[in-house]
Length: 236
Image 1 (tube, one colour):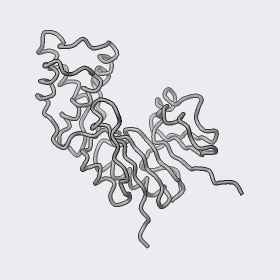
Image 2 (cartoon, rainbow, N blue to C red):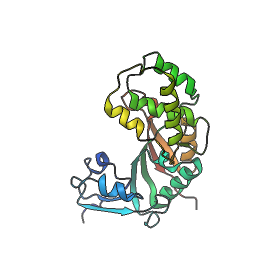
Image 3 (cartoon, rainbow, N blue to C red):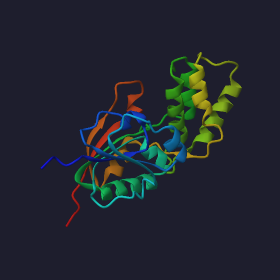
C-alpha cells in the first residue's frame, strides 16, 4: 500500500509557494476570495499535479474537519484587517487541520514599541532609508500603532502625500518601481493588520503551539517573521 498524499492548503495564490518543491503526490488546494488574484496572479505551470484552485473566504473553507495536513500562506493576518478576524482565521485553520497538523505563515509584524510617524520621516530626512518599499510598510505600521482594527492603506498614502508636499525635493533618488508601489495605496479603503510579536503569540492560542518564530535574512527582518505552528489535540 503506497504512502498517503500530503494534503495541503495554500491561503492565497502566491506563485513562489505554489511552485515550490512539494513532496511527490501532494494534493494542494489554493484558496483566494479575489477573482483578480485567481485570474492574474495564479501561475499557469509548476504547481503539484493534484491541485485545485477555488474562490472562498479563508474563514469558511469548503473542507471537512481534520482533513488537512498542512496550511501555508504569506501575509495572511494582514489581509484579515482586524485581530478579531485573524483569530477567526486561526479557528478555521484549527478546524480543517488534523491534530498535530502544521500551520506555516509569514506575517507582517510591527514593533512592540512602534516608532511614531514623525520618527519615520525623521529617519527618511536623515538619508538612512535606502529602500522605499520597506519604508512604506514601516510607515503603515507607525500609522497603525496600537489599533486592533488595522489601518486604512489610503490613510497611509495621504500622510505620505502630506509629507512630500512639505519638502522641496526627495531626500533620496528612489526607483520608479518604488514610487509606483507607494502610489498603489492612493484611495485604497482596505485595512491591513500588523500584529505585534506579543499579539502573534496570543493569536496562536488556544488551538496551536507556536513551534518556531524565525526571522528572514534581509533588511527589516524583524517586521516579517515566519511562524511555524502545530495544531493542538482537541480536548476530549
